Amino acid sequence: MIFLIMKKELKSFFRSPLGYVVTGLFCLVVGWMFMHQLDYFINNVQKVPVHMRNHYDFTNEVIIKLFSNVNFLLLFITPILGMRSFSEEYRDRTIELYFSSPISDFEIIIGKYLGLLLQGFFFLSMTFIYPLVLSNLEITDISFLITGYIGLFLNFSCYAVISIFASSLSTNQILSALGGFVLILGIWITGWFGQSSSNYLLAQILNFVSVNFHFTHLLKGTIHFSDLAFYFSFICFGILLTKKRLEARFW
Amino acid sequence: MREIVVEGITKKFSNRKVLDNVSFHVNRGEIHGFLGPNGAGKTTTMRIIAGLLRPDAGKVTIEGVDHSVKRDLTHNHLGFLLEDPPLYRDMSVYEYLYFVGSLKKVPANKLKANIDYCIEVLDLSAVMKRSIENLSKGFKQRVGIAQALVHMPRILILDEPTVGLDPQSVVEIRNLILNLKKEHTVILSSHLLHEMSLVCDQVTIISDGKILETGSIEQLRYKLAGKLNIQLSTLKQTQDFDQYLKSLPGLISLEKKKNDEAMVYHIVHDGQTEIRTALLKNALELGCDPIGLEQKQYNLEEIFMRITEGKK
Image 1 (tube, rainbow over the protein chains, first blue to last red):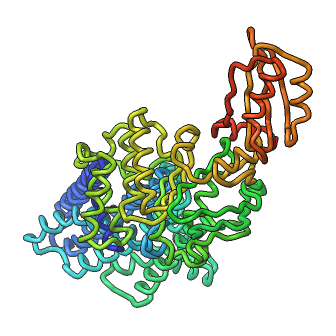
Image 2 (image 1 turned 135 degrees about the vertical axis):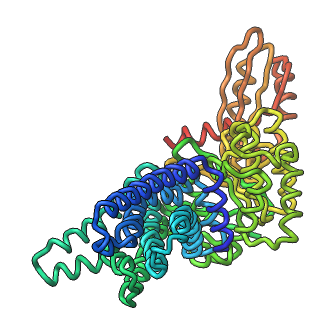
């Protein structure tokens, strides 16, 4: 049943003009950012004396910045991708098809969530072309690439669960997208406060609840168990909130 | 056998009581009409029966199983179309029915036969490969009915199923509902009271969240106007005949009015005894020259109006 719902979500995405518009814009912006970073790196390397060129690490200057930029774009794109999940179903009353079927709310949420994750994977796969183009240059560290992509995907997973929750709050898709954006931005801002707080304990707490704090570890090529535990807990919490929201129909 | 029993359901939305102690039952294999003015609580009642809402008090049992508690047991017994049909506009008709059937966990080998049946009885074969987005309102409504049927539920809840349909389609849907009666129990709501009177075995009239009357159309008719509602026309009027009418045992009401050349008596009688022959005989003997006698029956529209207006 989860697979059926996931398949339906994916079909719906690929049939919608919105999916293609967002994909096109994403590719355009990421491509431009990548070119800009590459251009900047090449120009700077040329100006630096040969014996100092090792300081200009290609991975740090281009690949990690590319990942950060993609992460920034996901802040805007994920709520747009997720806004339809429940809002549209509520608006068109198709949600009643699910509610009147012998399937649990959990299956509905997981089906929709997996559908959205695959859409996210599709988006991220659009960026595979950039490391591939550079692979012949042998200047990128493959482990950074793998952990970077894992980080991006995990970040997207968190943004997706927030977007799905936001989508379950309103029948208006625009409001849902806006709600999702504000919630994700809230998680980002929490991290900024964490970095600037002078109170050690508060800073630690704020940092820990910020996805970008954990993302930074993965960007550095390290995978900590605590980071994975955070992402897992975050996603479970988001799914639980959405489940509670669906159950509110009986309140 | 009682298939659906609604017992004392009450529902509030933000402190506004939408349903107040609503009780009625629907027997297996019958078509039960649900009538009421706009905002009476029909759709809310239907949504509660469908398991989409929970009542604040009371319960709905389907074949003795409490629907609000054990929804898993009763889910697949129910198919419904409430208000606007729940359609995925980007799907084709066939794909949509396949998806809904799969959601209802209909086995794949049976599902194809069910879809073919729905397409045939709802005359959807011409549009089965077309995107739902491009269908006319009437066809969308038919697809909505098809989704309610695709898992072959025993109970069908149809809220205004003929909305937006042309007169020919209304007749087709009426015939379809009558055919469904053989194997399904149907709860039907519509403002087309003539259509309702043609298909419904029982009706429940609701207003302001309260059940006003429930029973067969015949029972309601009798309850409203007594068994006999007679209109007698005579050419003349005599005091003796007037006296005779006033002294009739079992008389509920008597009205008379002049209509062109004739005098029309409107007699409502309890129907315990047969009076029509005696009426004609006495009218002749007492010199009234009777020219016509007809038994008037309230149609469903008149019953509905009298009940809902009478309770205001």
